[in-house]
Length: 536
Image 1 (cartoon, rainbow, N blue to C red):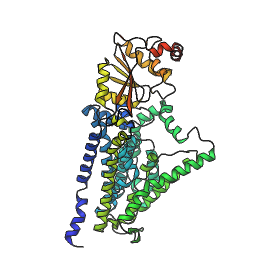
Image 2 (cartoon, helix red, strand yellow):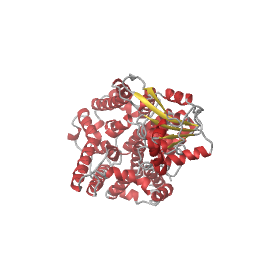
Image 3 (cartoon, rainbow, N blue to C red):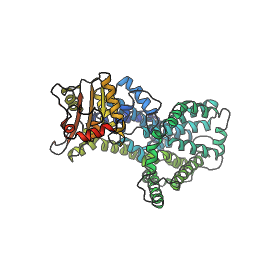
Image 4 (cartoon, helix red, strand yellow):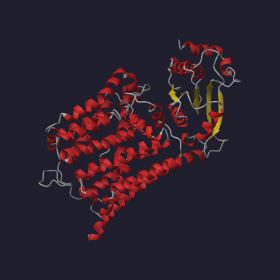
């Protein structure tokens, strides 16, 4: 190969940071251009990040803490939530590249990092407004980088960094504990990683982790049902007819998601890199060379890690877990490209193959961004309501015209509603009493509304799209005193108003002078009294 062609091949590897930065900026700009609204998990973060707490619900608090910090600078805006999520995705690529550079030649390391684009977990994160799973994926990539760096150059300070990474992972998503345990067990089975992890100062890693995780762990112990109930319900659905059926369903889910986690990348690599697996593999016995590409311990370490992860997931199936989600499985196998390429580190040596591989990765990123960008337009053309097609200006104008001044308290029926209204009225305190929760009538709506009335604060009780049950509205008011409930049907962006409209129901208090007791309450006084009695 000529010197000029060699320079051409290495050019992308010498500028990976530029590629990652440019692509991340394009994704952020595209997302902001697509819609100023947010949905699902990001709306939840807008509600939770109004203040700092040791815990918020079934997920650890670190993502919310980070969102809170960014909101201090940018406010509760679309830019703030989009910046946090996509910065973490970009950092995942960065950490993967840093990890791969510890054990692979420069060109092949770039292939390992770029290959993340073909892992369904990353693509799904680009398509959906996810939060904790995004941070978990980033924390896993960072942990592997720090561990591989420490194995190559053990020193006490390395344990401090590993302890920080483990704390980051645990405070991102509880399933990170499986990653930490699997990595530790795998490292103890391979001589070089075992020596590095048991070297001088090893106690610093658990010490740092415990110190950082302890406050939230205490909160979890005091709020065990809130922290664990949702996850346990998802793993063990109540409608599972029998243990045998649950075992078969769980095993099928697990197998399907394990294959889905790695198969797309394997097929793409096989098509673009030629028959690289037919070339001699990297040495599996110790050698005198310690340059990346000949490290004898990396492939066994990654292989043993994968075995432990799969074994633990299989034990969960035997223990009764009958339902899995791809979001839970895919981050655990994030290092699949690095594992394969550590076995064949020369896979990136061929210029033409490397170009095809990188082009396929870029094409997948463009495809995922295009799908995400066009999804709201597609739904609009089909006449389907989409939260990303909410017209926020119209929502704000309707509520202001009805008398809400943007101050006081907003009582929302769902986090999706609460997050959007927090962006529109950042001076108001947003509280969510979930209308889908059977226990909402046990006091949430009443306590929050009564607190606002006692302080003389303006109160907006609001529901969007799917109407909240009548009992949810009545629960916030003394019998016979509920103000008029207004219903607006607002058009979605790009959508034919005759096909779909967004329903906005709300009560503004203090009500306008002409407002009377709700006709719904007057027509059903017995039901209203029954709902109120539940609050006593």
